[in-house]
Length: 171
Image (tube, rainbow, N blue to C red; front, side):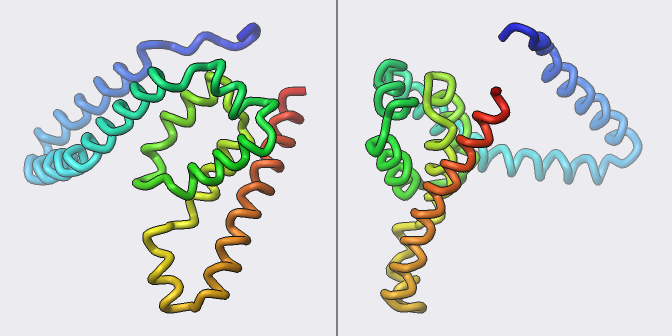
């Protein structure tokens, strides 16, 4: 965009190099702690990489299936009630860690998805379908239905507020 500074493309590599140098220095000073840190890092990467693989697969499929024209029509500025329904139902049905959805939502946003619908999607993730039977067991049907109604309602309100704030920011 005009007026924005061009981001450095080498910042990530510089950070990686800095971290590797620090690990190397710490390895010389305290090999045991460094071994533990590398072991923990390997364990975390073993848990994160499959999720990232799924994210990249979803992004690939989304790029094949979801065209910018479709996104602008159903999730863009003139999407109306269909966009809100898609965002809320998509949020309720979404599973897994939320960070796995950020990349896909960012890609959809670049293709024209409204900020309001992204906020509604993320907020409505609080309704967890697999946990509803357990919630009904502990708290009852009435409490569960009222809570779900409020979560869905506030996901829409949050989306509206986010859209108003983003419009003010862009003015």
